[in-house]
Length: 599
Image (tube, rainbow, N blue to C red; front, side, top):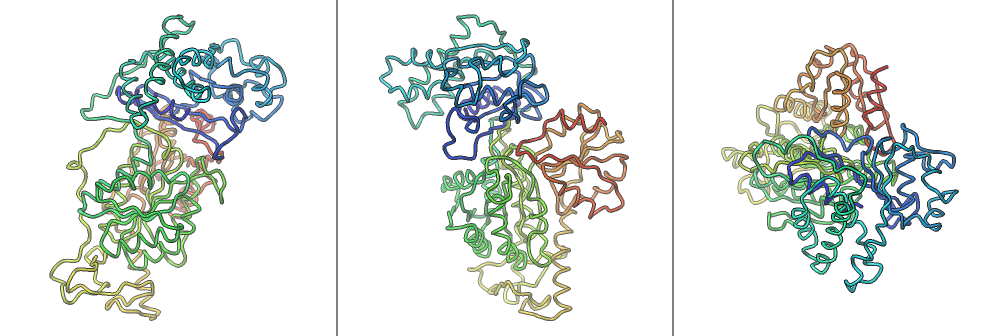
């Protein structure tokens, strides 16, 4: 289903439609097929002015009895007496539900914990739902009976028959769909012919039999902004943003990392880019990953490390070393459900306070957060720019929703991206350089091995504010603590002001950070109120107080228990904040935010 959903979303994006996707799959490597816990789903919204993957679907494709049950009962699928309910169901009362009738056998119903032989009646699906029974399995077998493929391989093609049917339903051009399929399987050419036949047969099935459902014609038109477009997942966008920043800064990109869900795809993408001067090291653990990156930063490279919440915990001491040594380092934290192993394939925003404060001592670092799969590119680039120009670690927060989800992305030109000016030591300091020297912003200079006349030691012990040598002087330590603090604070002078989405006149302000932007934008539109979405968290934009102080009601919405709200209260104790929080491993539902804010 992930392949099917991605291909459908990719085609929509290449046709210029805005998209937002939500892959949702089990944490188990091989979850039992046909069971409730083994359901793998992919949700996509497409059209114009798309902000979220959608709360409830207009079209559902249920490949087996378990999928039908999960989509119908939502989070209540384990309740034996549950039935269709508008609040929990994942589709509308007037939705189209396409079901593989060959996957509703007694054995299938038993595995999905049905109690009767009629799943539609048992689930209480209302008559307004248009159920479209299609024998997907039998039709796929018939299409490939002369292919020479074994039965197991044939059954794997069912999703392509369903995809062809969906292409017909959404009136998408088959020639582009076939081209996309050929590109997808170019490394496995033997799969192209059978999958092409099945996808065409699925399209023709809908067209020739004149199924009792109307084709869906998307509203809006392709983007009028000139350029090349594609769909992109957040992890790939992050990797490309890092590559672009290294190119712009004239640096080699070094990644020291350790595989961890859901950040591993960044490592995969960068490991394949040796042609772009990327050096990727898969270390033996999280600590080694960040330490190799710190070594690369000392050596003069753009250094990065990627992880998720558990790995950020392990990297905390080494990040403190980078703060003390004042070296540029980008740490990408793709947040997931926790703590510990938690929900490794589900999304949360629960690492914020760890990113802000999760190190020993007074240890300030810059914290940024991407807010869409596409702008993961922008904020990965921005994280590198800030790190290189201010000689500091930068923690970039994304999450599972952004990492695995896709969005329409306009591919930028390298020449159009902001300039990056690494804080390289000026030539006039040759011969009398020490690591304590700073510019007018309070940012120390970057010298690295091989630069004759700039030899120096960099250490994790406190150093003298004037000489750069080891110091245990109490007053000097306080001076250095404040110098490192000031260096982070002054970055606010070079970041954009906080922008308010809306007319700026509403008494109610929704506040969010990171990946919730699309959902909060849709909720603000429905409520007729304004939205302030934060991408720069430490330091905050200079006009934050001005924006917040003008509102009578401020609702901070987060996928945690209130971490950003607590941070804002610590910065602005005179301002009152409400909280709306969910911690269910899923993105917000717009309708629930609207319900809360309407009270």
